[in-house]
Image (cartoon, rainbow, N blue to C red):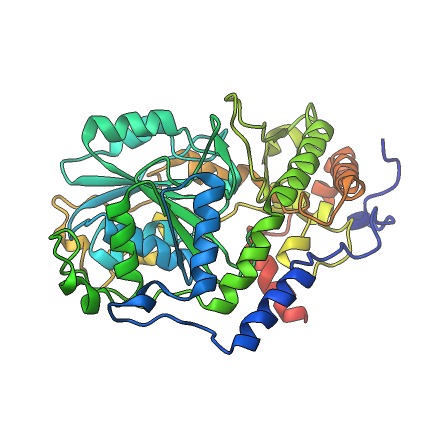
Length: 456
Ligand SMILES: *Cc1c(COP(=O)(O)O)cnc(C)c1O
């Protein structure tokens, strides 16, 4: 029990020294980068048929690592997972007016990738336990135009793949896995990413391992892999040389990763298991500390045998009716027990995650290129409040997130967080009384990033 007064009410904060920042690059990465610079070949890709259509040695080596480590048939690196998602939609040959079912509670690109091929995102609600698509909601969203499901392993928890794959088989749908937040995660013993038709991982700076920007597409289907390689590298130049009808007529773009990034990536991947173990340990510790606190529901580890969690960020559900303290004030009070954060990764608590995607203007007003592709949907299915009630409740009222399960933080910091939470709840009525009259806005990770930018 913490007897001292909460920092928000003028007492001493629990943690006074700044939280250690992530240090992501070590000597191995620096040497790898120097090797590339010494070779003076920062990218070997040529957008024409021939030896360099698949890039240089670093890119190819990095791809072989993903294939060997997780037994993916093919890995195709790309310059971001956002472009990787677009390539997946293109490789599946989805067409204008087709519908793709996806969750509304995810990074915007999980849904927006569809639009580039004229495919219409249709949102289905998620489970309040694993925060991934709810198979029942997916099945209810299927129409005669549905062609694909975008499965997101949110926060690093694997989605219920058996159920989703059964639905895909029943209705002849393709599955794309957005495993951006779940590299190395197992679902019932098998690595996520290529359990469906195609999927992949993000390598942006904020992810478990990174190349600054970058991504990797993975699949067990060689035809889809080959289409991705064409889409990645100006396929219109190369596809006419392909005899196979499935591979000609592909217009590509430039989604190529550089040699420098690939060389760094080949060292980064060696750290992945260590990160995952570290995060799992801290998440388990936090769960033990928070379990049984009235009004808080920390996320449980995946219940299926052989399933793991990447703990990208750690979700906690909050019930203000039980604590007597609004979620926003709770977040403010807990954060006040720590030094002012200088990054999203050092902000102890945020709330809400992202606004349900269908409430964003492009969906509410049904606009992309003019009203294309939304004009192809008959009858139109409006994007409006109330569409996915569980997501809306999590966004508005229930969801808390903490990034403090990350390296190089330790159990001590997790204990500070749990102490700060207990202290805040002991004083919930005093805090609500003192600050409860002021209007509050949702404090989410994006706000945290903006605050820190403004401050630096
Ligand atoms: C990070 C992320 C993306 C986008 O990845 P980038 O490499 O930043 O383009 C897509 N989906 C999810 C769920 C993500 O977390």
